Length: 209
Image (cartoon, rainbow, N blue to C red; front, side):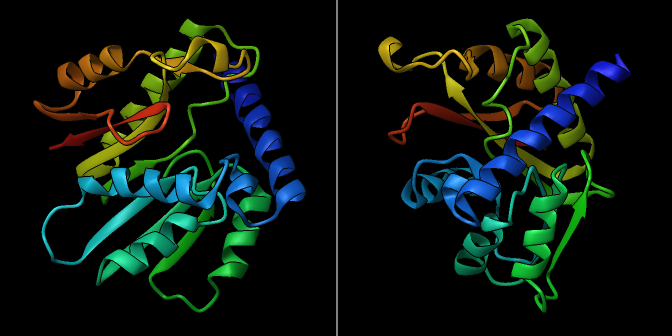
């Protein structure tokens, strides 16, 4: 199992490192179609943040750190830790946000500590040659990690099985929103929200503790 996980992480890292080399520090560099779509996703994820007091965030699969820009525009005091398995992504993020004392970045597959909130955007979309059940197990294990390292709650997004059939791609994973909603309700919290009304072929789940 450990070797399978290692192989999977290598595949994911290679894929996104290639995207960064091709498109640079842009939404396409982390496999999004446009800046508008990327911003729409961040808006839904950040609905997990409650109150006006300072907070902390672990951004799992942070890429070059674009979520930090969104948080800086929308919120006051916060601290941010970006985590990514791609060394190239983290190198780009560190250079991009050099001098930003509220932002930190580490190479890895999990945060080094607990934050108020955990967020994961787009990390479950590419499943390579893994079968659906194997990929779902990977998602569930990652959600366990998000829960363990988030004190107040976490948020993530997935492509949806309700996508138009003619537009669905074989290399992408389309998740059943009900199955993940049910998993989160049963395993993590009674306070779970499923957001599926923001115009993209995906959904966001918020888990509040």
